Image 1 (spheres, helix red, strand yellow):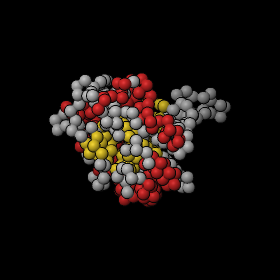
Image 2 (image 1 turned 120 degrees about the vertical axis):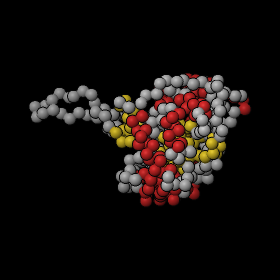
Image 3 (image 1 turned 60 degrees about the vertical axis):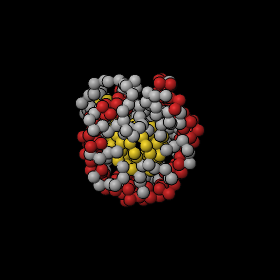
Length: 328
């Protein structure tokens, strides 16, 4: 059973979250096995910016009790490097799930872009929209505006203005990835829809911080403050710790907007995916769990198909699946 999304027909409702599954690196490890049996029905690229970015200094990850705090800093090759080097490799990914790889269609590619102004986003969207290999675009609006210092996605009025400015540059489906770090995510979702978004995705990571485990030598004046562990100072929390927050925000947004919703946040199993689908999501994105189980997308899609009132397709039994116990 395929899933309709913004005019696209996807094999099942499970995709990846941006930046959580490196398909190019995975292809080098799994070789042709991944090319013929890709675990997601569409692939969302990591965030692309106009200019190359090195990302934040190390350390970049902190494992919390029920999740992961990352301060990666969106390292990427920049727009030109992405189009020249990465896009041809991503275009080779196939959606075939255990059938004849020679007849498998390409994996629909959703390119995620980020800029600090409407002008930057417009340039990114226009360049990506012109490439036939790219099926849809996702705007990462968690970037601070260079003039106000506020996250674009946290201010409904600014968000609507940005989406409205970018919309004419995109002939393909335009998804807006919402930040949960705002007073009212529903108002932001409505603003994105009013600006012309074809869909919204949520939730992104929650702001979080971790302190270095060791204490510095205490000066004569008293104990010195402990430093942040992450090289970027603070980071974003993902994984099981944010699942309940994600469910609440996805439910609230899906109840108000008339465009499709991609739900994500702490998904580890078909049960978690069903929760998001049942509150109104059209697709479900898997993120942090892919670090632990790179085949999790296939596992969840297969398990969804096996449930009564299936949300997914019947997937051949020979698709590779790993079944680690899901943590809670």
